[in-house]
Length: 306
Ligand SMILES: [Zn+2]
Image (tube, rainbow, N blue to C red; front, side):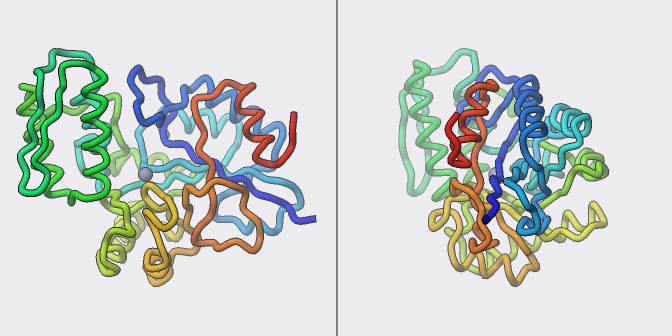
């Protein structure tokens, strides 16, 4: 019998009012989910050789490196003795800014007074959006998110943020609810024997859109930064955004291989089985689900009906 492994991925363990990208699982629900997994499954580490397991297993991962992984997730993981791998984007470790999608959310989708229109001035994407209702702003958010993810480099993104803050009529501030790890808190997290840190690039680009050399540099720089910070070998990786042939492709995999990465995680859904490519490990997104929904999704993943 071939045993199966389901790799799960989370982003945040946090209670947040506005969570447009559905990144948060509340601490209470996360604890329920972990207790259920601990009781019913073998839980493996991401970096382990999964073929050695003799029963169906679960692997827990987190992407991006939010501070709540330390403050809310870690105590639960330690209490239940559950290992997890956290893939950290290193650009945010020394940056006081929010991740750009969070900053966009802070700018467009939180409470406050909004003017009627946002006009983006750009040499290619001169656009304007109505912004007088939440629905219009959501529309603007989605368009800007799409452009920032797929067509805009970090330098231009910064220019757009300057325009957005000007439009909001506020001095740029950081929404502390969206804090990411710093050098120090990342070290603290890595000290736990239950935590493995993996890399997730420097600036979180959709890698397949970059030239090979740029992809390599994003991977190698994030690995080198973490190795220096943590004084540990870093050879696990997850692709930002993670969709195969959109966010990573053959060239990305080649860039991982020459950078010493041994395993890389995608967001292709499904189970891992022995013959699958270790550079395109499927993972399954976990939402802010109560126990009933969580159980049913996990069992479905393993092809078991309740
Ligand atoms: Zn990510």
